[in-house]
Length: 185
Image 1 (cartoon, helix red, strand yellow):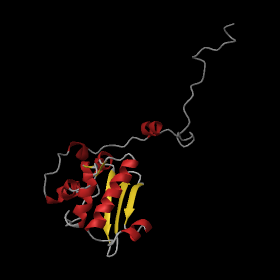
Image 2 (cartoon, rainbow, N blue to C red):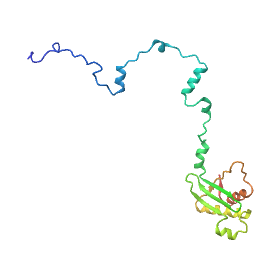
Image 3 (cartoon, one colour):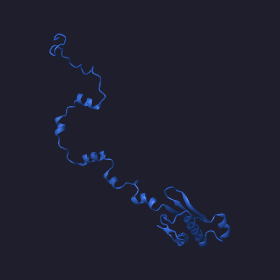
Image 4 (cartoon, helix red, strand yellow):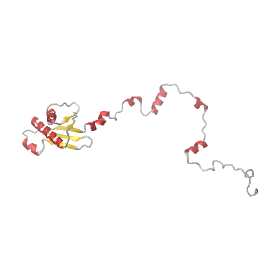
């Protein structure tokens, strides 16, 4: 029986095949053990470079933005700009042309028009004596208020353009809307 099973001492020792005969491993961890990169003692023990103008420029090149640019983020909207659409969703838009007065209430999020009134409408063109005077502005304000309430909108906002004052015909339209029960936020 002993002759059938050879002992471990009798087995020939196998040496691994040379590395060029072994198939390359596809795992990255296997490649780390095979290829050792010697560290030069100069790189391992060198102190950090003294801060001077050139090293600062090199360090700044690795950052995403320069220090002056970090303070300003021109494309980022402020908190008010991002939340205002949800806090005051309905916006009044009033336009005065040479011949007519146009007003509409829009939902900011969906850009859906809630209420529209214009002196260019057929029924107002025939009944109003003037399509651009103060009486026409009061009529437009009343119509906007009534149509907004019919659409269950009881609060809206008006954002004046740059250098625009709420006075004159615009003031009359907004005051009339307020008189008919619409809250301006």
